[in-house]
Length: 60
Image (cartoon, rainbow, N blue to C red; front, side, top):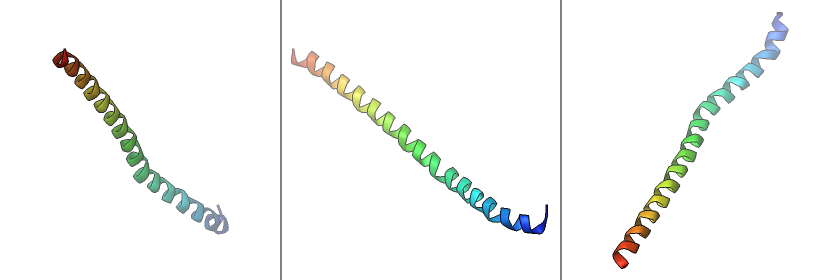
């Protein structure tokens, strides 16, 4: 590999490295937000069901 081709490849490798670092920072946060949203939906649905059952039992 000649020096000229190394100079052309170096910026591309730096950009790829920067994108990998950015993905390593951002993707876990996006995944955590998605998991948190699902857990929140399950929690709210469960509590609504429990409140409905208790309301039905106490109200009758």
